[in-house]
Image 1: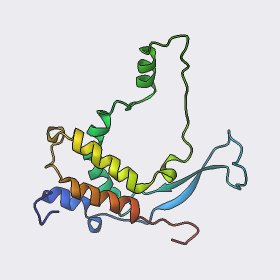
Image 2 (image 1 turned 45 degrees about the vertical axis):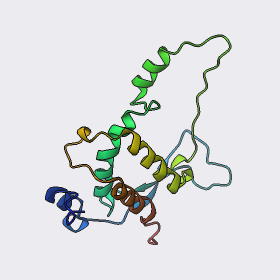
Image 3 (image 1 turned 60 degrees about the horizontal axis):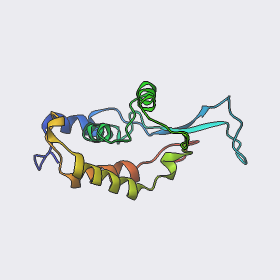
Length: 162
């Protein structure tokens, strides 16, 4: 992308994994002592793969830079608990309506990568405003390619295996 003049030199150097210390992402368990283990599981906790300092960390940050403004413009976006409370306080609910809360189980592992990439591309095509970013805009095809690298070409370590 640097050779095609799509990113500047500083962005190139920042995202180049040969310019920072890289380690293999690691699997670990986040204890959930307030919940019983899932049926059939020996694990009591939430599995986490820490990608800090991983080979795709910097390109993930680059993609985030372009996607966060789009995410914030979605009508389903909720910034935090206070934002959620403010939004539901303004909802007019009749006696015939019921408010329902849902908790998605294992959302990331149950998300089909191709569908997530397609949804991202659709959102970018209809919501991307170049003025949101001090960086030069990246063509959508390159954002999609970087998403594919992040989502499909990652590895992690678990018990000294990859």
